[in-house]
Length: 68
Image (cartoon, rainbow, N blue to C red; front, side):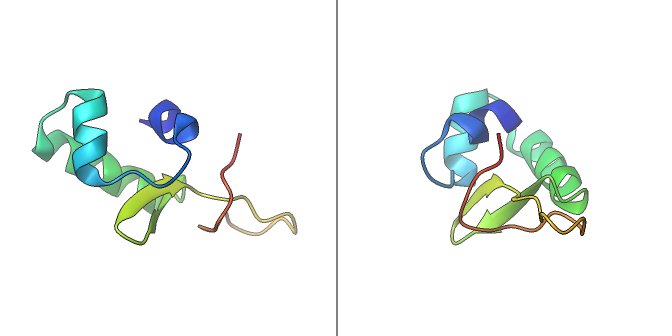
């Protein structure tokens, strides 16, 4: 999932992620929840994107740019 989000030019909706990854909706929801709780991804409007690291040593936060 992280690779799919990394390749995306903009946030991906749940439906787009499901189609890209070819996974069941239930499993996708579990992974989205886990990655969001670990601050590796975040919501962006109607979609999901990689979290943007904070340069001051704080916790990663969602933002407008993508991490590597």
